[in-house]
Image (cartoon, rainbow, N blue to C red; front, side):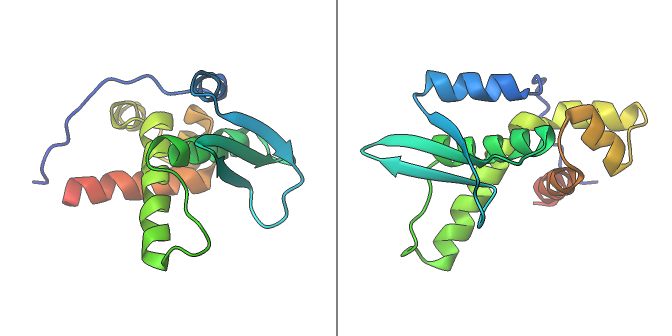
Length: 146
């Protein structure tokens, strides 16, 4: 039997909660017609700025904003000069921050017990993309098997 994960009851964050966190932390969020990325973090003088693609769906906006906040609040972003390994490490840290706030394990387990087993049903329930749900499931499976 896999090791048990510590169960904590957390409330899933909604997009407005993410914007409130950004505001409380002094992080500026703006929309731009980005072409290379759906979101990006810039740091200047210790202050963070998040740019989101202005063509995002509501679910994309939530997922991308959470990921970019994860960069700001869990160790920052990286520069073009950083090693590929360092970039991967920082991306994983930001993704973990987003996953654990948008789809807490306790709420995921509850959803599955209530019959929301398909990725589409889980994405609908948590207001995120199906692609993000796949990352969520991989993340928690890795934690259980570690």
